[in-house]
Amino acid sequence: MKRRWSNIVTENFSYKVVALFISLILWLTILGRRDFVLSKNIDVELITAPGTHIVAQTTDHIKVKVSGPRSSLKKFLESSLSQNITLDISQRGEGVVNVDIPLNKIEVPLGVRILGVRPNQIQAEVLSIKEKPRDEQKGQ
Image (cartoon, rainbow, N blue to C red; front, side, top):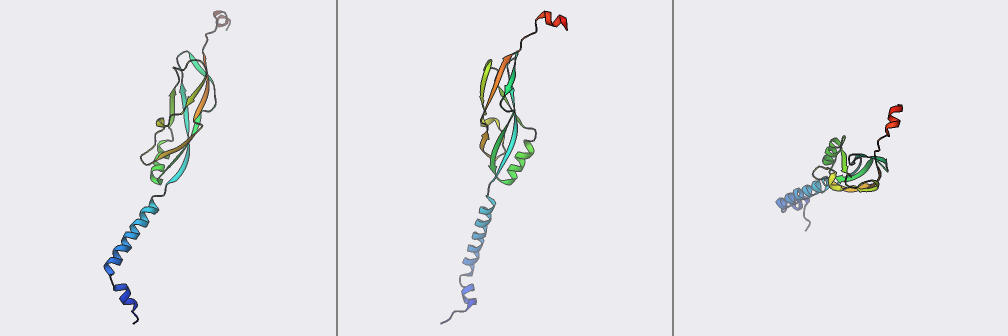
């Protein structure tokens, strides 16, 4: 009672074709869902109160690590060529100031998620600008 190959292939043929298409769709979906990881440097600008300025700052840029589909990461790279983060520290006053980097200030396209930021805090020294005495101004 040997069954031929042709009988095995043609038996329930429609079910086999549907199963093949479903498995192909699942395979392509899972293959296309692979996320990529990318790191990008973004400049940080600190705004101080009038009459003060930043004397020293630990760093002027941060490294952002993001993950997502390749097409969304390409949009992130193209849009962030001139991207910078502006943080207002005018209410902090003078002295050494620790500034946390808020993740909501970093703009990312739909589908991209932020994995991490390094450093996540910047330290800056803020001093007031003092006018030169009138005697020094006359001598120049």
